[in-house]
Image (tube, rainbow, N blue to C red; front, top):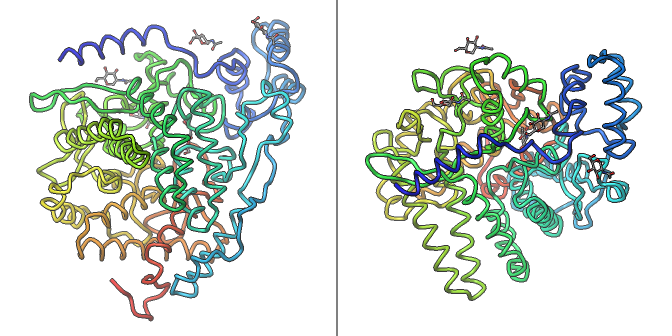
Length: 562
Ligand SMILES: *[C@@H]1O[C@H](CO)[C@@H](O)[C@H](O)[C@H]1NC(C)=O
Ligand SMILES: *[C@@H]1O[C@H](CO)[C@@H](O)[C@H](O)[C@H]1NC(C)=O
Ligand SMILES: *[C@@H]1O[C@H](CO)[C@@H](O)[C@H](O)[C@H]1NC(C)=O
Ligand SMILES: *[C@@H]1O[C@H](CO)[C@@H](O)[C@H](O)[C@H]1NC(C)=O
Ligand SMILES: CC(=O)N[C@H]1CO[C@H](CO)[C@@H](O)[C@@H]1O
């Protein structure tokens, strides 16, 4: 109880004195930013904050002040357009790059039984060099004139508007790279994220200053684990184990929350990124929303938006708490910081266990025991606070109404994916999870598993099927470890690979998200148009073809192994 009161005190103290979104005024906190973004010079708000300055920041700010005074505080759209043309430059900060370890025919292709799927995998492998980038030397010369944060190594970007390195996207990209034998590129990506960790104290959403105050699902440990499994590079683990601990401590220091359930106090993580002002890259959208909510403090609204963005699920009914206490409503009902997410805590439990395992490998038994004990505690809290005995699945928990949020979300299976479930518990309850899935309707769609069954028009809701979530879901089912679960996982992987193959055959493109109702068609909704490329989509197909390549078939005419 003491801990609970302490946390509440800390939280409310912070609310009075929020830091700006980032320490770079032009990109995060200035009259300049406000006027330019509210004038909607570009269809996508991200376009402006990605421009580089032609001069140093103070010169730019001073020039804007001059314009502002000259126009009595209301520069016209044309004047703003001219200002942007005079003081900003659209030249890309990144250049194309061919990774040294790229191979045209990585050996894993030989394990794929179906010829069309083998071609598909080769096609995806061919995409790597087209979405590989590195930072131009000019950024390093004058880093203060860019919103991009320079990084040492080349990297794979998601694609489209997402042209920098992203935190959780990197997990599935790295998986794909490891499968296609690009170990050095995978390692460079992890080292880039660690570089960001040391610069900011945590890993931001992406390598832009305007993402400074937000992280994303903490998958660094999982990335390092995948890399170690493939390479046994113990020197790497030794070099970065303390970085991993730093990241874990960041989450413990900033996102912990204590809450009561059934007369017990639990301490778990939530997404929580308090800072003042709209998201710079969605400035107009956020400001507009806050204006529609005159009874709320705009900074509370921004904090809910940013915290939802930190989850990776921007946006979703997962973060709506309506007046009735359910997940209905729209963005005006965002209350992310009062939802205890299953996936975040499962990922965190996994990170604690991985840290323990690494210490064991490095012969640090005392530290291994320390982190191992914490991992066990976390798993136990997930079991007692988030497992829902009635539904036979884990659910997010609503700490306003003190109740589980009993809705189908792919993230409900994250504890299985992250091996954050006690083995005895799994043996006892694994069959119940399968029962839940069969009852849920979530696994019956022709175009893959949708992230939710709520059709809100938000992009992280029905009918969208998102590659990373399909991966979490199917790997989760696989990890139940029974024959039946394995058959279901294989069947769902088959549906997914076939759907993406269909889309790829028709358009020669991979999309960031798909439509569960229409196999291979891209998904819609949300704040921006669908993006092609696409890092994590490619990674997930490579993952499934690596896992199930000896079984999957592109058509039913050949025998299907289930
Ligand atoms: C910049 O941030 C501070 C602190 O969060 C805030 O009080 C101020 O209004 C912001 N300034 C502008 C111009 O947005
Ligand atoms: C820019 O202006 C700020 C505030 O006036 C000042 O603290 C800072 O030193 C200036 N930066 C440069 C590079 O001149
Ligand atoms: C979130 O929910 C709490 C409890 O109902 C409420 O006090 C708060 O205002 C909500 N936050 C926002 C931004 O609506
Ligand atoms: C969101 O919900 C509120 C109240 O439930 C409603 O008044 C408002 O019109 C809705 N906004 C949109 C954009 O649908
Ligand atoms: C809003 C925000 O925090 N920005 C981005 C974080 O990264 C994801 C991609 O993984 C984007 O979808 C968000 O827009």
